[in-house]
Length: 387
Image (tube, rainbow, N blue to C red; front, side, top):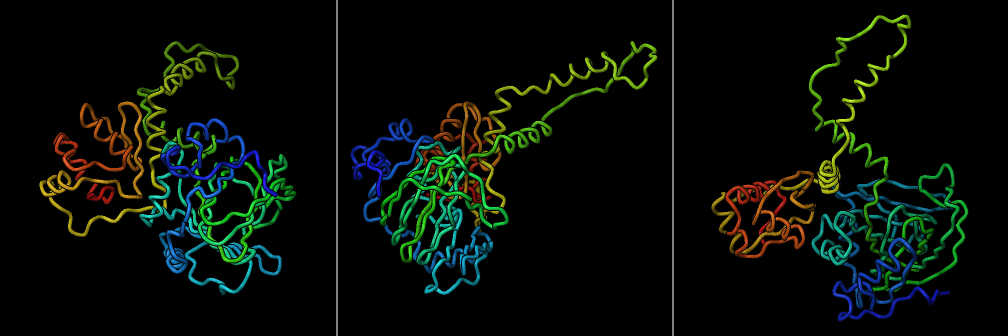
């Protein structure tokens, strides 16, 4: 049974330049649905086909550099195995699912699909996960702590969803499976259909025959995670010179007591640790642009010299490698966990590179020598490639 109030009309390119929200504009979607309620979009991408054939997806899952999980529910017993997925069950066997995380890091077509969701800021956009399942395969009823778009790529998947408040989990399970799942809506998605779910919205997807589903997920770090990261950042950047001293110390009849003067002196020093907005901006930029631990870059085998690189980039342009994360905030530029403060034309060029993921021919010629040298180093590190 489908819920009519939350269905979007068929895709209309003229009303949505991103081509994934039906007739909704990005503004209306964010205002009405984002982190508020689900949305089903029939034929969000008409005629959509899997970007990776089944065999290529399986090959990707065997790669040690790729994060993958094999989930089975044989004889009513859930099991999860982390990749590399070197041995998979028979395709004829029901009830198993292969999850391949970060497909956009390893395939240009997957990266291009993820870029269609850049009406959400890059600071929030995370990755594209591909789920392959045999008939009746799934990962059980669960909830995510982040927003997700579920795009059907092959076959059909039946989704049951509900806005339940009880998010308690079954204990002793290898997966986070809801103990009391009470769905209120049900949909069957065909290739090209897409379902948006806000955080903590209970859902369960079950394959109807062999199917593939693409999940576009978003970053939502916990406050604890951010707080710990910021404390580490401040520890690396704080500079409290000098040493505690108390030349006016008085004799005491309570030697075990921490005195008021000592507490006040230490408090005055610790007050210097209060973060400025600029400190928080630098932390966020470096933190959010830092690649995940399992991501590394391949340097060109025969890198061009600086002169040849500048000439080639000015002629053919430059683009970010699909693994590179680049952000900016006011005067700061952040790329792969590092921060810079360029000025003038250089800053505008790097902001363009961050927004567009490329610089076109002729643009690099306007860069300063310092920026050209930085771009050349990023190219040598594998962060940039020629257009």
